[in-house]
Each structure stands twice: as structure tokens, then as C-alpha cells.
Length: 333
Image (cartoon, rainbow, N blue to C red):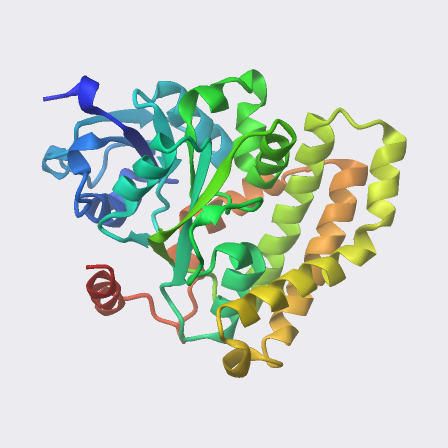
């Protein structure tokens, strides 16, 4: 049943309150052309709503029952430690995957890359806020993007050599909670990162401005706290970086605009997208300043439901439906 020697990629998915929240992405993974090379890992508080038949065709699979999932980072690190394939990645419950997604990640790793990111399309494109969230959080990997070495990958949308992640030891939970810190450290260590532009994920984004501002605030606060913790920063360095926080929205906005232009959507979105993006960037700067000065607080716990139960944060004016899934699957075939 489990062909351990043929495993190449361990893919884990997380159910926040129930395993049933993972059903859609498991069905997406069943479409993968290299399914027999995949170990599927389901991290959830229970097995509700997932029958064993869904695991048929995978090279291996396992359950990791965590009664109380509080943060993404801890759940992800638990899966990495339990994985049995040489490469590991996370498949979000709100992502739709190109059928060759896994095999292209594997190929990139086998070409010598330590971390491999993949391109992202918008799975719920009916609102401006959804696009603002996609570009604001994932700009450099928004499709179309040319394959090649990269200094930027997207958190929750990257695969890694498992042994490399395990080398972080007790810091792994923090590194996977805030993968931007992980990418900074990988670059500092001279590790090779690659963006697989032909490995595509259609990603459902928040479409409420209030939620977008909140997730940017929480994400940046958590990032700043993790960055200072991992680097063992002295108090004065935290103060210096907190003082520079007002400049961060300008730096991030410049990069976001470059990515909108790179993907050829300036005529579609500029200048109107500047309003939601600017508000979110200001919220993020406030969060980053507090993260450097006061730590992360409960930011990781508060952002977990937004990350793991995305359907709750899709507005009624931007329906996330089975019909849209069918359209997305036809694009990826």
C-alpha cells in the first residue's frame, strides 16, 4: 500500500476545526499526474468527513491528529517532522492546483534547488480587494512569471528539501509561521531558490477590505517579531527598525506596482487598486512596528482562521463556488 522508496514529495494540508475542510484540496491532489510519488499528510483535530478511499493512488499517506490547532507554523512543522519524502510542501485548503504542479516542483528540486516556489493565479477574481490581496501578499509570484532563480518566494506556496528545514530545530515552528524570515535566512546561507513559473496554484484571496487590512497587520506583526527573535536582536536594533516602519509602505508599494505592471494589468487596476492596497500597507506598517517593539502577541493565533478557513472570509459579492472551480480546473488541464 505504501511504496516508500518511490516517494518524492510529502504534501501536507491542514484542517483547522475538521478534516472535512481539507476535502477540496485532497481532490485537487488526486488530479496530480505524479500522484504515486506523493505522500499525502492530513493535519487536523479529527478525521471527520474524509473517507479512506480519498487516499487511493497516493504513494503513501498519514494522519496527524492535533486536538488544538492554534497556529499554522506549529501544524506545518509537525507535518515536516513526520514527513517521509525528501521534499515537503503545503497545499492550502483554498488552492486549486495545476495537474503537473507536483511533478514540476520535484523536477526543480532534482535540478539542485533547495527551495522552490510556484506561480499563483486568482481563484476568485470578482472583487478589487481580492486582487489587492493577491498582489499585496504575493506580487513577485503572480502569474505570468518566468521560471528561474529568485530571491523571493511566497510563504505557504513553496516546497523545500526536508532535511534543510529540519536543520532549524526548535526554530522551525517560527520559520514556517513567517516564511519571509525563512527566505531571508536561506539567502544569507547561500541556499538556491527557484520559482517554477509553470507550476501554478489558483488561490482564493480575502475579498473584504477589513479582513485584508487585518491580515496584513497580523502578518507583519508576526513577521517582525519572528525576525527579531530568530536574529536575537538587541533592544536598540528593534527600536531602529520600529522607527523605520513608516517607510515600509512606500517600499512595499513600489514593489507591488512593479508586479502589477510586470503582469500587464496596470490598465485594469491602476489607479483604483491603490486605495485598498495603501490602507492594508498602513495597517501592516503599524503591525510591523509593534512586532519589533512588543513582540508578536497573539498575532499568529488570530491570523490562523483566516489562513485555514478561507471560505469564511470570501465576501458574498465574490462567490467562491463549484462553478468557479470547474473553470479553474479546465484552465489547468
